[in-house]
Amino acid sequence: MRLNTAKSIDMAASEFELIRHYFSHLGKQREWLSVGIGDDAAVITPPAGQQLLISVDTLNVGIHFPAQSSAEDIGYKALAVNLSDIAAMGGDPQWFTLALSLPSADEEWLTLFCQGLGELVERYQLCLVGGDTTRGPLSITIQIAGTIPTGQALTRTGAQVGDDIYVTGTLGDATAGLLVCNDELHATESDSRYFLNKLNRPVPRVAIGVGLRGLANACIDVSDGLAADLGHIVQDSGVGAELLMETLPVSASLRAQGLADGRLQEIILFGGDDYELCFTASPQQHMAIQELSHSCDVPITRIGTVIEEHGLYALEHEQRAPMPAKGFDHFQQE
Ligand code: ADP
Ligand code: MG
Image 1: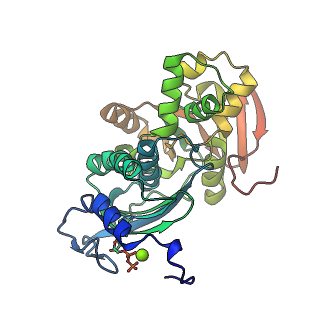
Image 2: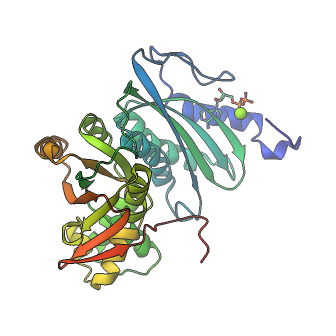
Image 3: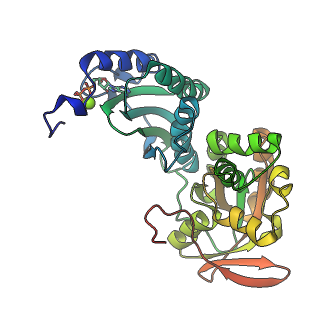
């Protein structure tokens, strides 16, 4: 749709051709795809017995990634954060659309962007079914669709009093990466590389999400920080949570920074962008969760318990203190 008739808001026709050239190979033919890239809309036949999971996320330059980020990292991360939402629901990612706002049709940039994006397209056998391309400040919007057997989606509303709370991987590394970018953390070269990789190349926990079907009672991906995202689970489930502070998983690299306890805790609890999964499950599922951790080769750590009393609480040195369910909020007033 075009409200303004000025041609400048859209790419010139030849540039459209160019962009379609870059993206058409990511839309390989599938049996469920009747019409893909090139028509006014894609035509898809969803698989029988499955429900569709639909999610959309935008990445804006200067907000979701630093202006100096490589095109390859931007392409990777734009898709990774969307895959993470499908993982958090326990789904199998299937197809996506891509809305790109670009300052110019820079071939080198587009090639690298496609490489980063393409890495995840290959890994998860995804299909790009359409999109939109306009000229403007750099912004990438991806809408992703996944499938899940009917009734099995993992939501934020199912946490039960007495459930164990778990988190995958480690927390705070992406925030450390941002601090390195901003020159606020001076780590060794190898630790810096580790943190930046966690920030720019989060690994969506798709296999774990699928493995949690029938095991987890509630699940969310940690995009805005553990406190904020676990806060969504407890609020939407009408329960509370007690976190065992000593058990929160921290990488060796983050530990090695020698941060003061309070600073480290702040990063772990309130720092965003880790894209790990936080979920709750009955204590009876403990063994099954250990096995899932083994088979996916990703640590899954028990970090607390779901309680009746509403809100979040930190348990440390046998002391219990309320914790704000805050995190990264784009519209928060300073
Ligand atoms: P329309 O004016 O009907 O929206 P467009 O000229 O915007 O059509 O797009 C033409 C075709 O190219 C459509 O099938 C659209 O889905 C596809 N397309 C445009 N931009 C992209 C993109 N960035 N990624 C994938 N497909 C795209
Ligand atoms: Mg269009």
